[in-house]
Image (cartoon, rainbow, N blue to C red; front, side):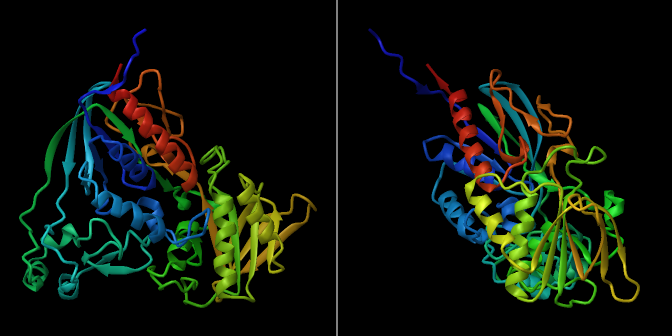
Length: 426
């Protein structure tokens, strides 16, 4: 009786997206022997996790998990990383895809030592996209301290400012500044594609009754992560934007754009736990501060999250109010915000005035804004549907459905296996 033996076919794996799902998929495939091309549109790897202060399940900083993954990538010659890269075209069939990748210029080459002299010399300031526009940074910058690749980036605007461009170039002792870099396209031949294109916070300004963009002391939960992070715009000190005052009271508004037929009809999965976690940020920095959490339902999936929820409920300064927020109003002169909601349990109409409001904005797939240049199927909301029978291309993590870091890692491992199976012939 003969036995069928699986053997690897010639072919590589393309992973699109360098967030936690993309990193996991790339590493799982490369560490069992497959060539992987990992591409990321930002100038750094790490995705949304890199922007967090802490993440579940251990409430550790992003450096905890990312440092290990970055080291594994550096040590693995089978992984080729392209940042500032975008997929322009994917053609072909399962097992044989022709892919065109556009590489945008960084204006900094491999000679960079991260000395920072270019940033010191640069006089142009830009809004920090990493900090959601809450502060300004130099036009020559390192995305964050542990950025991978460890190399500065020059904002394209500097190239069009001759005096500043000259200052930046002359400041570099290592000949790392190259304003002659241009966008270029590379072509790859791969056997399978893992789409790990991640998510973006729903645009809170679209939710008119919640006041984001109208009142400065209303922020989103991702902005709160940056405020609490040691490398954030306030070096980890949580203060309200209008006057940098330590907040004595904070309201969290759940389902800001989620479970709403006018915005995102689905549950975004992470929002409840994000607000409960951020309540601990407030309480640790300000032991006397009051925290009000307005919710529809508290969803704490799994025993560990349920324990965390029960722990937060025991805090005498945290008030959980079951009721959907109808409107918010700013008090003249103080910058304080009054949150209006109906308590679904007592029927009482609540007017709660606080010094700052945090909106738990929904999770929207990146592909919702612009479909990817490949033969893919999507849900109405823009999540990529996995056609496992057809095979060849697979969506991992939040590109496929709302998920937390743990679930994204598990899913990405599974999709790496599916990609490998595409390359294996019996």
